[in-house]
Length: 552
Image (cartoon, rainbow, N blue to C red; front, top):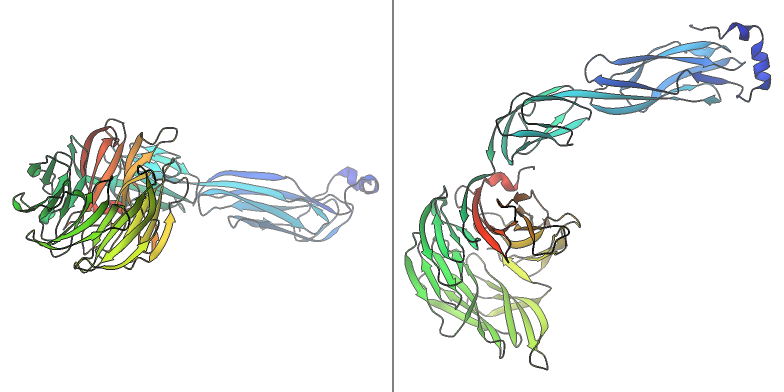
């Protein structure tokens, strides 16, 4: 057993005097340091070691001494002479190793037992692993998820955490190799149990092409062969799969657009007139309502039939709604008038894919006693048969609604205070609410300018939202970036990856329309720059289908 004499003074009797006058407890084991920092140690390399001395600073022998390290598996005792018995005034030694298996800062305690009063030694050590970015394409950057470093060319950094996620810029779809070879589409997660070498081999931008317009987009919709049709206030234009113009039709008045399942394009004019074109822009037929009407909504079923929702009358008298079902040849199949009060304003129209049911969402008002103001009565959704007969009417706190081809409905209300957000409800085909919730407070992503289900019948219904950011400290008419996202399905509201769109002029942007192309399932995004009150142009982008699902 290894022991050391305390001093000649102690041997000559000083311990007796010490024991008689000191306030120290009868048996005290003392470690020579209250704390020790092993400093930086590279993971997997030579560990750090330190020798500690334990002294029996009392006049009495200690019959049972033991030492231990508690708090972290990365600290361990490698040698120990403190074996049970330790005479008064004698010392023993213990050697501690710090051998981390992961990057990070760790702490532990060296403890001695066997006496009434023992102060442990606080141990600390930091481990690091090198992260080498060996290659990257020009114009890209690799960014550490904890913001500890950014590489714009091959680089090497010590990382003092157990895990680190690497992201790349600009936004797009990366191809990683080496330690990141199996990384998902977004970030590369590294477990730092050794130094790592990664390479960014290539990347693709999120959107394949962009077409700038003089006016904001109102509607985008798919056509065959991955062509698309887009509408703004001046024209309806068809683009091919590469964004090149196929044909264009001028518009003389405000219209709404829908593409039927047989790829015909129905345009609803402000006065209720419907003109249908084929996918090459040639007129097929025109329908004109008999009564003076105002156009509100239009949808189509999978058989190519078109359904329009009009309002008739004036605010000074009565306003009723009229649903008209048109065949593929533009012949009126049936119509029905809906009126729940003196004044009726529609906010949604839907049809089940096979045309078996039609849905109308509206708000009803009465006129006040002075005849000038309106008094809210209710908001409701009505389900109609294929002949226009009412099946049921359900009252709720609906506002704007969108229907999918299963008859399910989503209702969305924006939160108009920074950073914005949304309150949404999803109802089944019988009007029963499946969920009603909102995005987390203070999480945004902003105001919702459009919401829809994918137009393709063979895609499971998912909620797509688009809009613009609300900027803190400004009024609601000043726009930040545009954004869009997949926000969940019939099971829950679940915000997916948010994709942002910046204005080239730095004056804000918004997303007004979203659709999938027919074959490749690319996402077509349309919107505007500036703000809705002061637009400065528009855009169309074709995004990679993975944009909505990638990690970041």
